[in-house]
Picture (cartoon, rainbow, N blue to C red):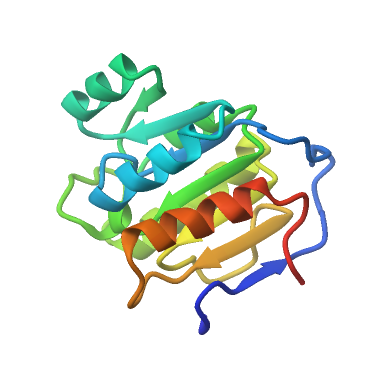
Amino acid sequence: MSGANRSFITPPTRRYARTYAPRMPVIVVGADTPLGHGVLAALSSGGGEVRAFVTDPSAGARLRAAGIRVALGDVSDGSHLAGAAVGCYSAVLLAEAAIDGRERSFASDGDEVLAAWAAALGEAGVTRAIWVGTAPSGEPATPEVAVVETGGRSPADIAAAVVEIDDGRSLPR
């Protein structure tokens, strides 16, 4: 994808797609990455339910102490993510967590992790996927998809773009 904040919508293909309402639940996958901390903080300031999916138990404990709902799991296991994302309208997926040095028991590379995440969102009934950095190739598993490019952008700018997309009634065409 080229462009600084390119978004696109695919037609709803799932019966579970819900109607948008402000401050619907959102989950941040990779909330224990440096960029994830900023995205999580920006989303949390809006007052809606924000969940974090992390692999680092100490990061999870810190987030719980701050009042964030935390799911701890292997980023390469789509069933962990699917369970944590049930009831969320949006999911923010930080590609950094798919390719960094953390252990991945169910995938051999980052592309497999991204594909597992996409399938998990479909299983969980998530409506809007916000991919930060890169999105998997292939058919989207959610009715709405947005990609926030990270190249040359500050973490604060990236977090602001994620919040703007999450808060939108619909994605720009």
